[in-house]
Length: 491
Ligand SMILES: [Zn+2]
Image (tube, rainbow, N blue to C red; front, side, top):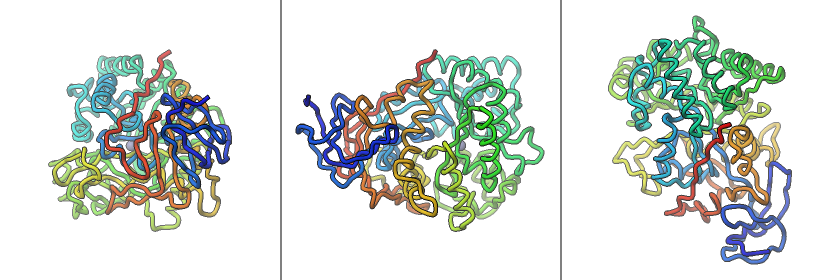
């Protein structure tokens, strides 16, 4: 044996799938883990990782990041695969093409996008376009109108075409079009069930927030799973449920026990971030979520929104501008416990909802480290380190392997049926993709904050993607773009 390119020598190797947890060497060749053993022969790149943990890189099911600087922040948080599954992209082939042309440090993949397909079918907006264009249209009532039968047919056939093109599932930003006919959502779920594809939903408003809603947002997801048999993934339960997390998770748990295919994710922050023009951030609707204008911080200027008048101005002038929204209070013990329950719920995975950087000065996504004027939500840089830190400490800590599993193995498994390539991700063993992270468990921690949002996490020493270092000795490797597309195998 031998002939390996890299050996990571003498670390504590943790594989959440097999339960392997011992000091060993990890040999890497041709983008895969070749062997795990002790006293392996030397390799041209032989790295001493004694005292560090060696495990599978994190699989992020919810990343909106498409800029190099943002992807590097994710890599420095242990992420080796960043998938855009909630907003999605349509036409999906164009999204894969442009990611391949740019080159990415981490693996990438896309669900198709119900919202983008609907913007085209119902509002006549041109398909594709940039994320900034998409965000600026999100609050436009034009695409949220009821669909005529022919428009619904066009929308569904667009989604079906994307699924046939290898889209990983269907992303449904339902909560951004709160008056859409619940029947349409069931049709989308039915299409997903037929294709064997999961759906990723930003839930509609909860009944506690909007008593006159056509249907409760949580009930709707559960109903779709029950009626269609589709795998319904409930995105960021923490942010859309706010202080109703226990009610929502109780409902999901009962449906799961009855056999419905529902999975959940959460990120460990009390605030969210989205386009300031979003329907649910209209001044007259803030009260539904217990918000006031000053609950919002407008990222491009860093200002706390002073008044309803100012909020109207910003929504008019820059509807796609990102804002941080205080949903739960991280300084409040009860709110912190709620957040933790969204993470510790059985089967819940960690997913970041990472956002692209907003540039308050000149945009320069190639520069590293990011310029001082770059702003994002701290979840972009810190979700996974923070989740592992929080899950392994506190009153009822998980083991390190259990916490890592929520970041790597469990998200990979959620996609495996539709995406067989995911069977080689999220685990570390012979034959697995060499998406590997090496960290110091004593110092692993998020560093990004709401006021210093692009500070990389601490403690992550090396990150390899397909056997190529993208982080080495804690630093970004400048030219590394080893990310590969992750595609479904349509049945
Ligand atoms: Zn969302």
